[in-house]
Length: 111
Image 1 (cartoon, rainbow, N blue to C red):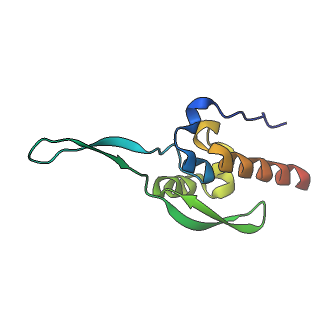
Image 2: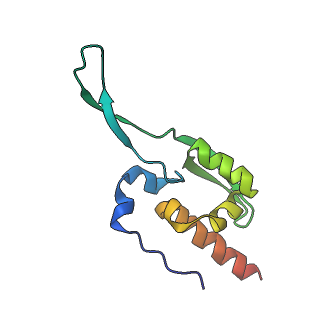
């Protein structure tokens, strides 16, 4: 059986990352520093794209929020299903783990 997945407190740093495949990308913090050297706080959000990705095992197209880095990694693994089954639990988040378990269940029901 697939191991159960428990989210730790450290993974809840960036709440929006739980609703898509962000590949560990988080909100970053820093300062704007103009010529006067008066620092003002600011944030940088990850580059998020809404994409439709096809799952061969589930036989349907999924509408997901992903980063370009994750899209390149999906191509490297050879598809969405292989990516979700081959990546570490800590980089997937809640949505990724939900999809991983759905794909894993569908694969084992076929065989």
